[in-house]
Length: 265
Image (tube, rainbow, N blue to C red; front, top):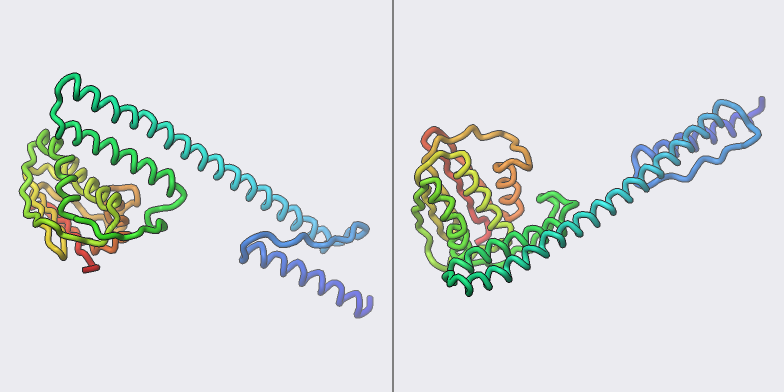
């Protein structure tokens, strides 16, 4: 065997190494390795095996793309299917108000919940492939005083059912740069935590230009170091990070304090 033979063997081995490197470390798929059909040596057998691996990877990638496309289309259809009856309910609500003389403020309160649900469904449809951390949010000037007041009105009935008194110090026209829907979702998760876990009879809410503080005087809870992304604490933490808010939670047997610090003044 001469030098040319060994050079050819080394070249084929280098081609195999280069192909494997692309499969392992780079995006996309490499071209298949050229194989001499008349050759049956171990290197060609290895090349044939690698080519089969490339085919299988390409097939799996196509299947994954197809499944993701079907999932995306299903979520969009589901979003439409949910929003259609929500729109109908909203229209029927005002008809019922006229028929049964329901006060306008109560109708608007229920209607705002329907609209909020519809907006959440739309947001889920638009961003279902991304976690909260990967969503891009445009922060705008939002009147936090009005948004907090709106949220408290939404939760007032449930708070009352659980005999929770609301005390608040909320000045007018406090403006923060935030996302309205995400901030409302943040408040929903905090108030939901209070109702479900705190076992308190009072919450205190204090707002100023720099921070929002929500205190309950319940049983407290053990703060997980790395809360699940789908748990109440995990969602609160993720939303605060997205809204550029510094979150601090203190909890003991004397109650729990949520402090949201506005880092952009």
